[in-house]
Image (cartoon, rainbow, N blue to C red; front, top):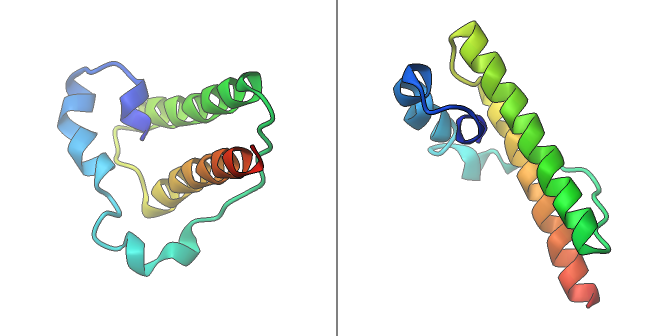
Length: 98
């Protein structure tokens, strides 16, 4: 989540819980809103690179939220979930491939 990657300042304290739980009550009924994409992980370096890429996307969103003094939209939350699900699928595929 975006505010996990930004300074824990007044904005973060005020908005952290709301951002973390923005789709909690509905996500299981809206799995179709989580768009995934292909990630290939063949090494620890690939995994590190993907984790860093996704963390940087999240950090950028956190800075945007703070600059605009707002919470995430539902669409942004589902996009964030899409990054995480895509990474998890890639990790599982790598583990199964052995």
